[in-house]
Structures are given as C-alpha cells and as structure tokens.
Length: 426
Image (tube, rainbow, N blue to C red):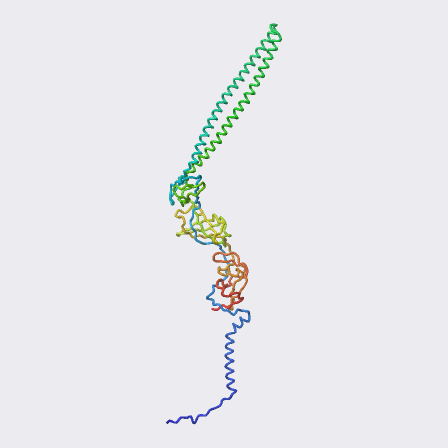
C-alpha cells in the first residue's frame, strides 16, 4: 500500500466571532442591493401610486395639439330618386296595366286604365240633365222675348191712346172757344186724356217690372245650367283620371296590383322613379343627428370623380340608432349616376382655427369623458379631470384640463381601473 499524509493533517478550529461577521457583512450587502433596486417602487408607493403596472405596448398614447379643428361626417351614401311618386286609383274598378316594372316612361304617358261603369253611367246621366237644362234656358229666353214684345206693344198702344185723347181734347177746346161745343164735352175729353196718361204710366212700369222678372228667370235657369256643366266637367275629369298617366320622365318602379285586379278608390297602383332628379342618401349616427341642418355643404365622390352638394332633407325619425339625410347635387346633375349606386359622402359640420384638441379614442366615452390619464416624466400615468367640447370622427376638442404637448392615454385606459396613478412600464 502507498502511504498517505493523513497522519500528518491537523484540524484548525476557526474563531466563532469571525464567521458571524462574514455572514452579517454578506447579508448587509444583499439588503443594500435590494433596497437600491426597489427604491423607485417604494418611492411611488410612498407617493400614492397604485401597485399595478401596465405595459406601454397595451396603450395608445397621443399628444395634445393646437390648430384647425374640423368636424365632419363621412360615410357611404346611396343614390336615390328625389321624386318617386306613388300613383293611386282615382275611382274603384278593374285595372288594366299597360307597362311593366323597369319600363322607361315619359311625362303624360298612360300607364294604366281603370274600368268604372258606375262613373261612366253618372257622366252620361249628368250630360243628359245638362242638355235638358240648356233647352230650358233657350225656352226661357224665347218666352222672355215674346212677353217683352207683348209688353212693348201694350206700351205703344197706351202711348197712341194718350196722343188720341190729347188731340180730342185740343179739338173740343177749340170748338168750345168757337161756341160749337159744350163745356161738358171738353171736360169729358180732358178725363179721357188723364185716363190714357195713367194707362201709359202703368204700361211703362209694368213693362219694366215684367222685363226684370223675365231676366231673373233666364238668369236662374242659366245659373242652374252652369252648375250642371260644372258637375259634368268634374265627372269628365274623374273619367279622364281613370287613365293613370306618368307625372314625370323616368322609370316604372314597382307594380302594386295584379293585372285586371279590382281595386277600391285611392288604392296604390304603381310607383314611378324620376331619374332626372337624383339625390344621395346616407345614414348618420344618432349622436351627430342634432348637428345636421338643411343647407350644410358636403362632398360626394365615386369612380374617381367628386361633386359638391348640400343637405336637402333630414329625417325627423331615428331608426336603429341612425337618421337618414339626403344631399342634393349643386349645379348640374352628373349623367353617369344610376339608382342605388354607392358613393362616398362627407358633410362638413364645423370648422374653427386655433383649437386645442386630442386625437379621438375610447377615453372620450369612458367615465363620461370627464377624466383622462396624463403621462408624467417619471413613467407614471396620473388621472386628471378634463372638460371636453365638440367631437369629430377623429378629434375631440379639449376645453380645460390639458395643454398642448401633454401626452395622454387615449385608448387602453380601462386596464387602469379607477386608480389615481399607475406605473407605465416600457
């Protein structure tokens, strides 16, 4: 065997106090290192910072800016006819359609006919009554002429009788002066003259009153005839409206009745689309509806072209959270547009200069838009109160609480909860 040196080894006992000092020194160094690393976190805790930490990659941050602020609405519009009337049945009857859906029609073209026997019979009866009244007027005029001639004859006879009595009185007076006639004869001749004068006066008065009566009678019959003729004209109009005509140049839209169907008065028959007057209809969110007004300018674009327009109508009803608005083309209408064609629409609501604004994000809707998280230089996000103003599709006006250059969390702030201060880690 090979001999080792175990017999020569000697165990040396270490001093107890030295080992304790080494361990203590190592612990102190470790605590100091840990304190240095944890000091920022302890400092934030001491200043009221929440213990949570959110990565900056989960947030959308934007800077407050100052400049022009434009409020507008952009969306997709659909070309619709400004005038698309629905035609109704003016009277009940059987309908004969003369066109099909999609046919092009001209103004005044007959699109359908309604067969109404009752209306045709009424027109024939009233025409017959009008003819009878017209004959009565003619008869009254003839009678008036005959009676007027008779009255004139009576007046003229009375006038002749008066002249005869005057002549007789003159002769009797001369004879009396010559002594050839008695005074009684003169008195008789004077009485005869007075009687003839009274008869003439009555004939003149009677002729005037009788002529007025005859005139009134003729006028009454003429008025009755005029009323009857108006009734006939109205029936003729109703019969004419049995031919349903197109109110404009355009295209037949939808047929609302079947061929030879019997319809009631005022029943819907068909629609006509006026292609000469087109507008663009867009759906606007309810939140922007209160800002819309007739006459607001807008831009319409599509197919590489753009046109100017203005709002012509705004629907008073909200449907599914949206309001329908229509834009009319300024100037001449583009010829290449078609019904239901899709176009891009932008409506300018407001434009102001030198406005403090922030890019729009979820912060505008969170907490009622009364507070935002402002990034500080120490890497924290502090919740500060703000007052927001007008809003557009991509911007929000800042009225108070922020200044240009401030960096604000505009999206992702829901991860902060309601903490007053949150650490944002890189």
